Structure formats: C-alpha cells, structure tokens
Length: 270
Ligand SMILES: [Zn+2]
Image 1 (cartoon, rainbow, N blue to C red):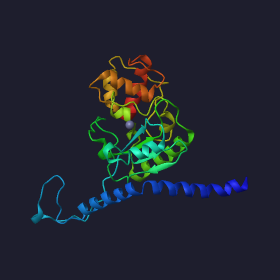
Image 2: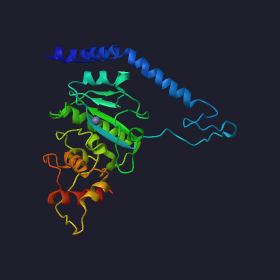
Image 3: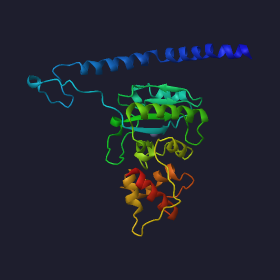
C-alpha cells in the first residue's frame, strides 16, 4: 500500500511529461502567437488595430491595465474524452478553443491566458452583450451530453470559478451556460448539470418561490428578457431557461410554477 502511495507522484509526473511532449508543437505555436500579440502591444506610436492612425499626435497615458473578463460561460464538450477535446482545441482548422478544460478525474487543463480571447461562445446574445468571446472565460467540462458530471469535475469547477470571480470581480449574475447565450443552437451544459449548488456558492442565481406572488399583468417573456435571454424566438428561449432552471421539464411551455420562478429570478438578475 505504502509503495503504491509513493508511486502515485511519479506516475503523475510521468503523465504530465507525456501531455507536454504530445503537445510540444502546438505549445510552440501558442507561444509564437502570444509573441506576435506582445509585439503589437509594443508598437509606438500606437498602430490602432481598428485601422486608425494618429502617429503625430500620440501621447501615451500612464494609467491603464489589461482588459478583464466579466462573464464565465460553462460548456460540456459533447466529446467522448478529454484527449479528444485537447486535440480539437489544438488543431487550427477547428478554430475553436476554451480557457479551461476539466476532465472526468478533475484534472484542469488551462489552455489560454484568461486575458486573451478564446473561441468558445460563437453567435448569440445575452442582455446587451453581442460578443461574448471578448468579455468571457470559457470553461469546457468533458462530458458527452447524455451522462452525469463527476464529483471531481464539479469540485475542480468550483475551485476555478472561485478563483476567477475573485481575480476579475465577476458579478454573480454573469455565470451562464452556453445554452443561455445561444438558445436553439446550443444545449450545453445539458440537463445533467446542476446550477443550484453553483448559485449557492455565488456563481449565478437560483430561485426561492416560497413567498412569491405573481402580479396579474406579469409577462413571462419580458421576465426572460430581463434575466438576459434573447427572446427573438420565444420557444427556444423558454427551452434554454428550462435546461438551466427546470431541467426535469422538457416542454417549451411556461406554466404557473415557471411564472413564480421567473418573478423571483427577474428580481435577482435585473
Ligand atoms: Zn458549448
């Protein structure tokens, strides 16, 4: 028994060595791209990336910092292993990525500096945000979409969320799922993902309908809009809301229980 315990760190080191060797080429590519961005930041006078040039009148301010992420978007990978996802995110032709990938055993692969823009959210809308990749951290959880998430994954996720929330001062309302961002186009993380334990720790909100009275003129669709959903196509906005807040209900119909939930959520998210 003692021998096995002693061997575990050796085994872990071996595994880590394998991972870094396997991705030596793509790690080099990462470093090269970061170097190019660093070069862009070092250009004086500033050549604006939007194409504007005021070289003669450039005056550098002394007061600034890096832009920070203000949202976290949670995904499931819809793939069968962490290995497949690491591969997908290191093949240029896929053009997709995330900042973090969380494997079934709880291992966290940090794939991109939080201050850089990952390609994880795609087209969508949440409140008035229309470019989620520019303002968010993407976290992918290894899960094929039709299985429960592991305890180790949730434990690791909570650790990552805790750190991100603190580091970037991310508001409680701004922890959402991919399906919240892109109703109809995305359903991840699936109905197997429990948002309540996250909300209890300050990542997103959950509801309590015990003392809730639904006003006579209550408009459920407007409540969804206030929470953040794009209600252009009401039935798919409702579907995303259900996946997040009422996962056992697979209909796209707002019932009396939903109205109570929405009254409560609307107050918290507005
Ligand atoms: Zn996703």
